[in-house]
Image (cartoon, rainbow, N blue to C red):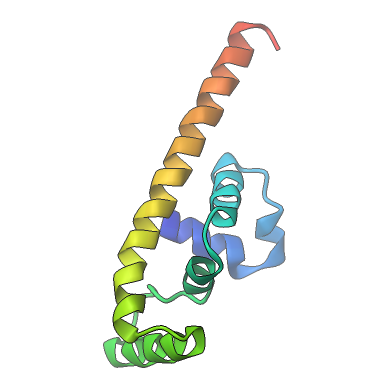
Length: 107
C-alpha cells in the first residue's frame, strides 16, 4: 500500500492511529520526524487529489496560514512525500530484519 494511502487511513479516525500494523507504526514514527510545517502539509492533505481549482485554492489558503508562498507548498509536497516514503520503507526493512533475527534466535 502506498504511503499516501496509509496517511489517509491513519488519520481518518483515532482508531487507526492505534493500529498495530507495522506500516502504520512506521508511518507514525516517520511523521514525528517531520518539521511542524511538513506535518501540517501532510495532515491537511495538501497533496490530495480532486478538483484542480479547489486544490489550488486550498493550497493557497494553506500557504497563507503557514506564512509561506503557494510555490513553497507545491514544491514541498513531492519532497515530503518522498521523504515519508523513504522513511517508512527504511523503517519497515529494519523491523523485518529485527523480526527475522528474532525468529532465527528463537525469540
